[in-house]
Image (tube, rainbow, N blue to C red; front, side, top):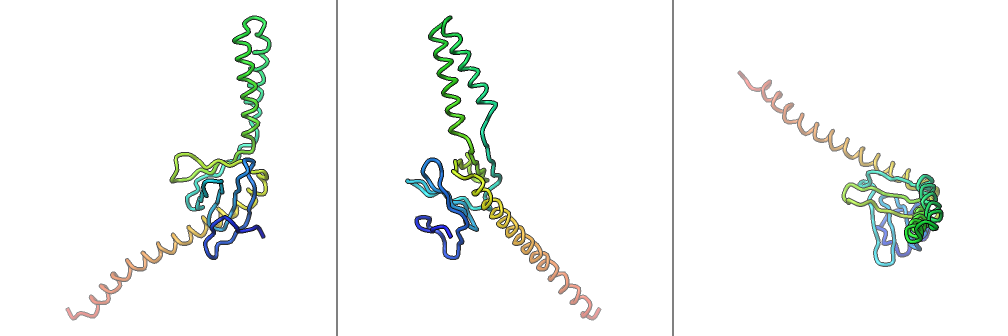
Length: 172
């Protein structure tokens, strides 16, 4: 069972997964929400607010394009040193940035314009716990909606039944 310390969990809230992020932060999956603990803040994302969870592994196309740009930069140093060094440096920086953004998990929400981005150390373990938790929360939400609809339908039918009974019992 993962440790609950430092997460500010509600009473009765079960912790399913707690893992580290590559930045040194932590991520936790409970039965109601996703928590991202950073040194200065604790981000809480309820599953009812999640619209999509996307995993971006490694972008090989961008890596090949960046390496091509760096190679062209090194090749063109003999013609124009300033432009060649600039292209090579930009290509190598792009490869480094692409490598740093491997295994990015984006959690898109209904209420925020920008998604919550995390870089977990173990993406598979996070997904193994996150997907069933989101599915269970959505199923529970759907069950509540259906219950409210049936309650509203019963409340709307009840006055009609009372009127028809009154019409039958009134002498005419």
